Image 1 (cartoon, rainbow, N blue to C red):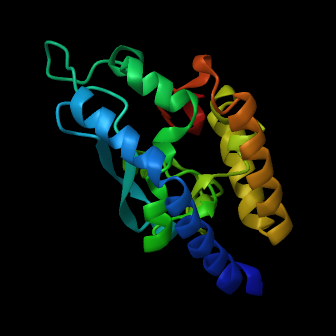
Image 2 (cartoon, rainbow, N blue to C red; image 1 turned 180 degrees about the vertical axis):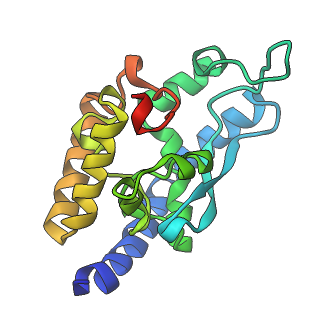
Length: 205
């Protein structure tokens, strides 16, 4: 692997994540207080996700959905659980800010394939499993090339392309495109694309 992948990328991650936490602390504080009251004392959402080499870690995000369930005790569909405040937070990608803590801890990188659900692990084919050869990221190549507006297969191909082409210039390009898309609310923030359908395996697409 290149020196950037194994050494400099981690240094850049820690520096930028710490700077981000300091600069965004006022937003973190305000959103935390608002969600503390609107979510009945639960401003944060924690969930186990697979990281590099499928090692499981706990991702930290702002809690944007309630825990309402149907008559069978199953959680209601995504669109029925997103709160009005949660929709606003997702629209401007504010729910992702706490993941800077995951970056500092070493669970994640700023740039990489998004960490998905643990239950998807048995469904990946051998090629798709390559997305776990690197640390997952807060944003990534798939996020700036369609995010939830593309199919799972397209998303995985973009993830694998990133894994096979990691470089400082690629990461810089992704960061700049992410900032642009957040500012103009293009693609990554589209209300119609807030959530992906459940991944059922490549053969079921």
